[in-house]
Length: 175
Image 1 (cartoon, rainbow, N blue to C red):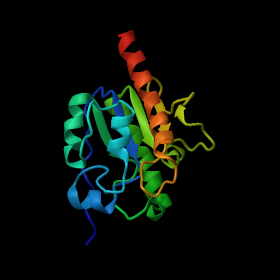
Image 2 (cartoon, rainbow, N blue to C red):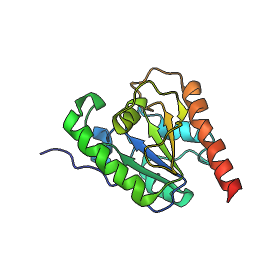
Image 3 (cartoon, one colour):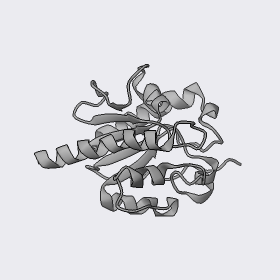
């Protein structure tokens, strides 16, 4: 018997929808996003100024109050993203696009360049805001994966994530 998928944290008109590859086994066990102790997600968000304090994985639902939601391109937990099948990505791409169209977040933050490649069908994109969103009217923003398996330096990752704060600030100023 496999580990069950974890719940999305979604609501209409989020400021940011964070999209991962798929839940880790630890996330599947606990039911919380980015729960692997080696994952730097919550630390990055705090250091980038996206959250006012350092949150814990078990507080992931509290981030909805800040306007931040969570989903994954593939719902099935696994040890690594390398275990995801092409069929799972194909199905996940369709479901993710439907979620984005339905909930209309201001920014969709893809936590991993490969997540965005699987979603958009594009390759070789830069970090940050993408020029031609799959869902018109939604800002698509590509960040590095926060997995402990990623060898990018933490301060480089934080700098890329920090770009989201500028977009959210600009969006809020325009309202």
